[in-house]
Length: 97
Image (tube, rainbow, N blue to C red; front, side, top):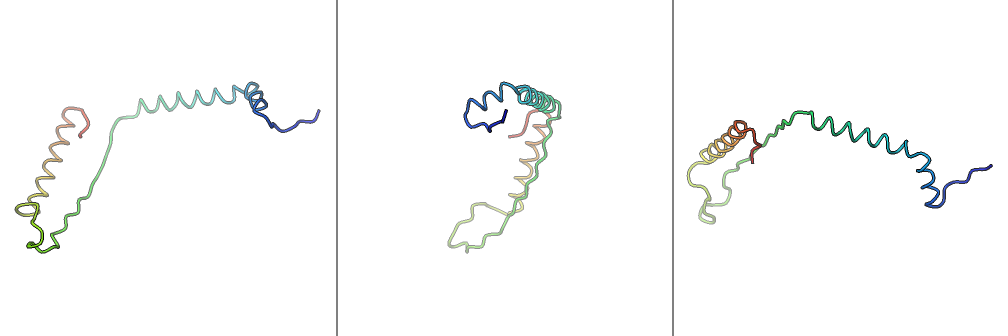
């Protein structure tokens, strides 16, 4: 008997019914492994950021400055706010916003 290549959808369905174990069992095993690993790995995250602060390049008589005082004061305030948010999130066990 000479085999013919599958040409219709019913041919593929017949092949699937004969070989369903080769499709379903690996899919279930992969799902179980991924679910197990994802629930057991620790939920630790690390992120970094870099903030570039450029001095104002437009003359002050054209555009009013949006900050009052020195840029380093604003940087320090932003750093303090971010650090306190991180410390609070670590203390509470909840992720920072």
